[in-house]
Image (tube, rainbow, N blue to C red; front, side, top):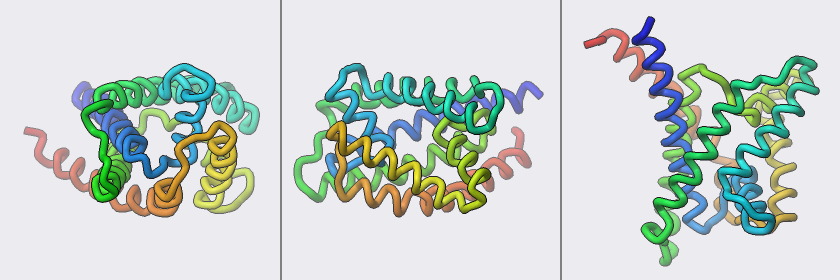
Length: 207
């Protein structure tokens, strides 16, 4: 039992740290971030506070929204996911600042593609911990349930709302934003079974 808890904790923390590294790389590339992350950067630049702080604050708002839509008590554990994510984003942006500044277009593309891949891998790892989905992921599932539509449609609707917000707050929107929306799901679907296979192999070889 202790080994299972240790594994879950490691997947949760490690996955979120990898995920936030990917997010930070896409932001550093200058080609555009996902609508949600672009909103965070825009708020940070125009209102104040760090990108990670806005991750946590918006998570609180989404938590309240989710509670209203589901008519249940707020899923407080989801804040833990947002808190670690916010800290991770701020940590990586601080560490990468001045160290990774891709100027040529080729370098920016490599930085963005690497960030997109790393984000998918980190998301797959953290989701396999089965600890608590972020309020954003929970909202996606709630909208899918309430509308009876696909998860893809629910996610697209949420992304559209945050895309408008990113425009309002002058967030980093570019070709990378479109690529994140179009390719993010495919990359996650690729890594989910890969991570599961690795975990199954580890379970068969506990030594």
